Image (cartoon, rainbow, N blue to C red; front, side, top):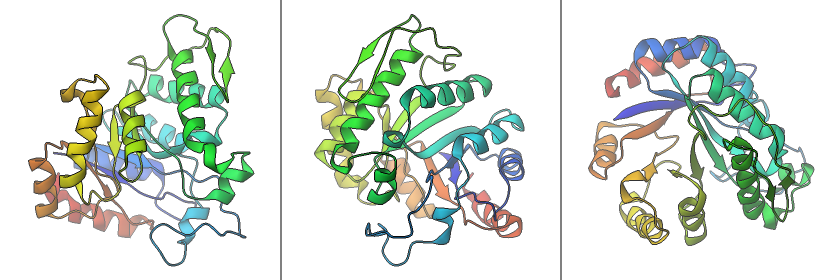
Length: 275
């Protein structure tokens, strides 16, 4: 199984350059980074994990800039977002960022996307909360139009673009796209419609939910062998990873602490047994 990592990189943690070099030297498969542009102080949206929101959420580095640094000092390390809040971006700008990073890294990018949990953050970006899923779907379609080999127009309900010259293109035409979120028919329908797979947080309950996703995937006419499920932000153990393997999963993303160099490197030493 390929073992990648995720971490809340901030202005107080290990740097992207140092971490990326250590990951590649130790044989880890990739580095995925989360995204929050800001955390409004006055917030009614509850932290999904319960309790107080950890301070690193309000200090995250821009994932594309940090991953660009990681790409520049590595040759094989996979690069990923976990997750990009697509609805909060101008899709034309985002398409350029994604294509540039994938092009410069030689096709190493996985675009993990999702819908978010922080209503106040989204509203500051002009996002009407109840429309964020369809807004994400619309923007992904627009970006794929810009990544197409020939100039392609797109007209959607919330976004549009004229047929345009837009280079560079992602190295493989479009990066691997995985959608994060809790299991459910709406999420699974969107995965089957326009993504390559699922980023389930923690990986709990996959024995029950994977057959449901696979059914939605095959009903959409997708190749059963093409579905990719990548458990995300996992606290690893030998038993947990063996269970994932038994389910046919070939990649997992383990959680690193949002800490300085010494603690992160100690955690990598601990996780090295799984690589």
